[in-house]
Image (cartoon, rainbow, N blue to C red; front, side, top):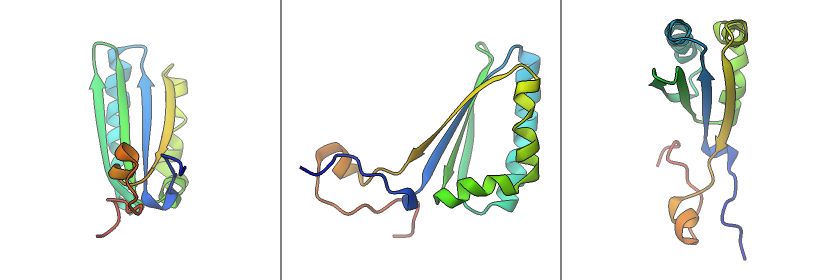
Length: 126
């Protein structure tokens, strides 16, 4: 039997980073910094397809969700100096973070119904 999930790194990745802030002031400050970092990333890393932020003010938490066209684009985040500097900031502000990288796992028909269809990422041209 073929496996239900087969990872295809060339099909794209989603990166989800969670920020848990000690105060709303820290949350607001980090959101402002995050917006500046995102602008630099968009300019310097063409592999970023989309990025969204989901904020929960009551819990002082936000999620940064980014969609990347290739795994190498995720690695190129190290070339964006503002991101490198910004990655050190949460710990200094007492912000707890956790991050995960989710890889393209195949066509939805294969994942949901074990259909015998090729893996073609929606992040790549049809």
